[in-house]
Image 1: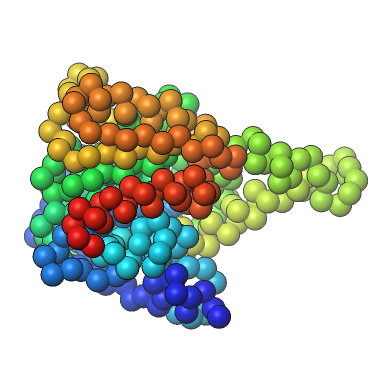
Image 2 (image 1 turned 180 degrees about the horizontal axis):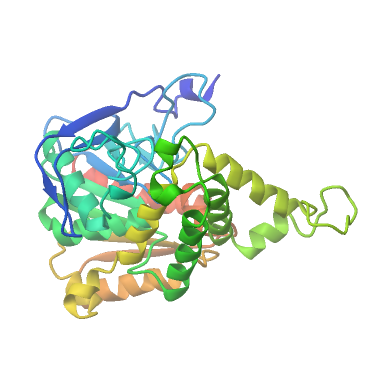
Length: 382
C-alpha cells in the first residue's frame, strides 16, 4: 500500500489560495497592497467550528504540511509524520489548517511573485516581514474560514515563535498554544549563523542584487552554502558522529580538496538539493524574521510582561540534543509564563538528532503530544 493510501495518511490534498485585495500594513512601515495566502486543510471542521488547529511552519516550510498533491510525489508534506489520522495531530478529531507565510517559497505572495504595481518580480523590493506580520495575515485566513477560535495553534522552531505571537496579539482567538523547540528570541550566536548564511547568498555573483529572476539565473553556490551551514546547526554532534564519524568516501585519504569524508558528501547533497526547492530571497527574509523576533522588546525586556495579554494554556516542548534552540531557551519561556500567572506544561524530550527532532516521532515526544492534544480535543468534544 502506498503511504498516501495508508489509513494514517491524510491522502491526496489540494492546495487552496485566499486572495486578499485589501492592503495590509507591515511592521517595517510599508504595506502590501494585495496578496495571496496559500493553505491546505486536513480533516473536517465540526458543526460549531471549535476543532480547528493552525499549524505554523519553520524556515524552509510552507503550506504543504501533510499528504501528497499527487500519488507519485517524491515526498509528502514537511510534517506528515505528525499530522494525520491517529497521529500526534489527529485529523480524525481536528480540522487542521497549514498556511504558507508571506514571503515563503512555493506558496503565498513573496519575492518570486509578480508585483502588481510594477508588473515584474518583487525580488529585493518585497518588504521585510516579521512574525507579527505573519500572524496578522493568518488571522485574516482564520476569519475567511469562519473559525471563531483555534482549538490550538501549534508550531516548531520559527513556527513556535508564531504560536507565541498569536497568544500575545490575539489572545481571544486560541485556546491552546503549543510551542515546540523554540526560543523567546535568538541568541547572538544564532544571529551570527544567519548573517553568515545571508552573506553567502548576497555575495554570490549570480545574486544580481536580488534580481536574479530577470537574469534567468539562480545564486546556487550562495544558497547551497547557506543551507550547508544551517543544516549543521540543525543536527547534534552525537547524530553526526553516529551517522558519519570520520568515514572516508573512498576508504582512503586522497590528500586533496575534493570530497573525501562522508559528512562532506552529505552536506553537499543537502545544499544542492535545497537549491532546487527553495528561493534565495526567501532565505534572506526568513532569517531576518527570526532575527527580529523578540516579543519582550516592547516591554523593556520583560518577557513575563510581554505574555501578559495571553489567555491560552501553553504546552512547551524541548529536546535535549537541540543546541540551536536549547532546552534552556524553552525554560525561559516557561519561567516567564509562570511569572505571568499563565497555565503552562513543559516536557523536555531526551533525543539525539538535534533541532530537527521536532519533525520526527520519538515515543516520548509522540506520547506527550498525543496526551496534550487529546486533552484539547476533549475540551471541544472532538
